[in-house]
Amino acid sequence: MPHDLKELGVRKAIMAPLSPTPCAEISDDELVSISVRDLNRQLKMRGLTRDQIVRMKQSVDSQDRGYAASCRIKRIEQKDELETEKSQEWHDMEAMQEENTRIRDEIEALRSKYDALKRFAMMKSIPLPAELEMLP
Amino acid sequence: MPHDLKELGVRKAIMAPLSPTPCAEISDDELVSISVRDLNRQLKMRGLTRDQIVRMKQSVDSQDRGYAASCRIKRIEQKDELETEKSQEWHDMEAMQEENTRIRDEIEALRSKYDALKRFAMMKSIPLPAELEMLP
DNA sequence: GTGATGAGTCAGCAC
DNA sequence: GTGCTGACTCATCAC
Image (cartoon, rainbow over all chains, first blue to last red; front, side, top):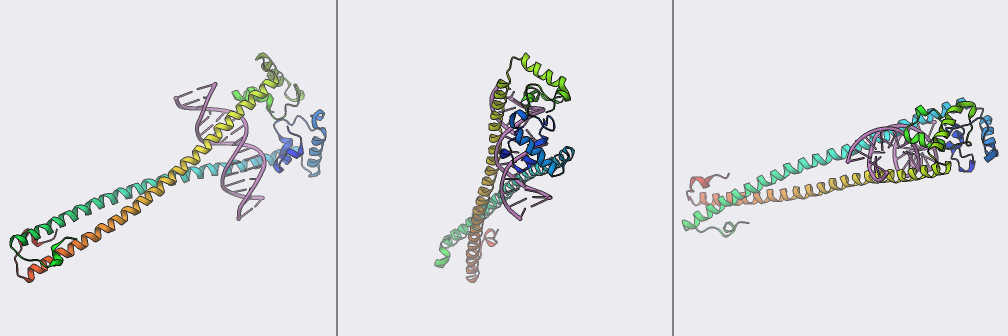
C-alpha cells in the first residue's frame, strides 16, 4: 500500500485505505507512519467510516464497470457498422459493374447496327451527309 | 489482501504476497493467520525469496503490458484498415459512376446519329432492310 | 457529477 | 511457455 500521499491521485487518496490489505486501522507505522495517520485523519475528518468508504468504492467501481462495458460494446458496434457499410458498398459496386457491362454491350450493338446501315448505304451508293458519315 | 487461497487463481496465488500492502513477512495474524502462514510456507517451499517473487511479478506484468499495448495497437490498425478500404471503395464507386454516365452519354449520341440516318433515309424514301429499321 | 477512454492488470484461452 | 484478449480498475478528460 503506497502510503505516500504525494503519489496518490484524488480517487486513490480517498480510496487508498481500502486497498486489498488495509491491515488494520493503523499499521505499517514502521514505514510511513505519518502518511497513514494523515490518511486516517482525513477520513475521520470527512466523517466517513471504513464501511461507508468500502461501499462508496464498490459503487464507484460498479459504475465504472458499466462505463467500461459500454465502451467495449460501442467499439464492437462501430466495427460491425464499418464492416456492414463496406460489404454494402461492395454489393453496390458489383451491381454498378454489371450495369456498366450491360451498357457497353448495348453500345456495341448500336454501333454495329450503325455500321450495317452505313454499309447498306455504300452498297446502294447512297451518299450520306458528312455529319452522318463517321461514328463519333 | 485476500488470504483465502480458494479464491485465488494460479497467478494470483503465486503473486498474492506481492499485493500492494504486504505489511510485513507475517502480519494480519489476527484476521487470517493460517492462510498467510500457508502462503509464506508455500513460497519457502518453492525456494523463492520475496525479492525473487517481486521481480517475477514485475517481469510478468511488464510482458503483459506489452501484450496489452500490441492488442490495442492492432485494434486501431484494423479499424484504420477498414476505414481506408471503405474510402477506397467509395472512390472506385465514384469513378465507376462517372464512367457509367460517360457511357450513357455516348449511347445517347449514337442513338441520335442513328435516328438522323433513318430520318435521312425516310426523307429520301430509301427503303431500309427490316433488320435495320428499328433500334434495339 | 456523469460518462468515456487509454493504460495496466488479471484470468483464461489458443497455439 | 508465449501471446492475445475480455473484463475490471484507475486516472484523466470533456461535458
